[in-house]
Image (cartoon, rainbow, N blue to C red):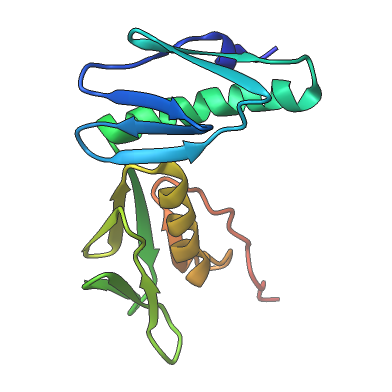
Length: 178
């Protein structure tokens, strides 16, 4: 049984949630989000100011999707009301980033700058050696942050690279002098 699925999802004031043809739409002050839901496995009821989810059958798929859809619904409501933020830190001599229009340009030790297109609905801001990504869709934001980090992952000897804020990199000792 899903512990997340049992708890009803509260709909705050100013948020509109509709379910039509298996697509859950959430409209709030910051954005409008859509997500397809498999309604043949999980029953979604919107009653008043809360959403209740329940598995249709006792199959393994229905039980797995029950908690997953509850978490997705909570994330959508949080996204349209507050939004999400991911902060990345750049560490290394000469490593820097800049936002130019809808692209982010990274100079991280390669012979060429790496450019990444910022997806729609996500905004990026660079201050010194930190990249702040904000958006209302948690999945898209997390995927873009992972793509930025993948350009130059932190290495274990000196710790140079792009890391999430607060991420701990396990350091290796390196060569020993005899």
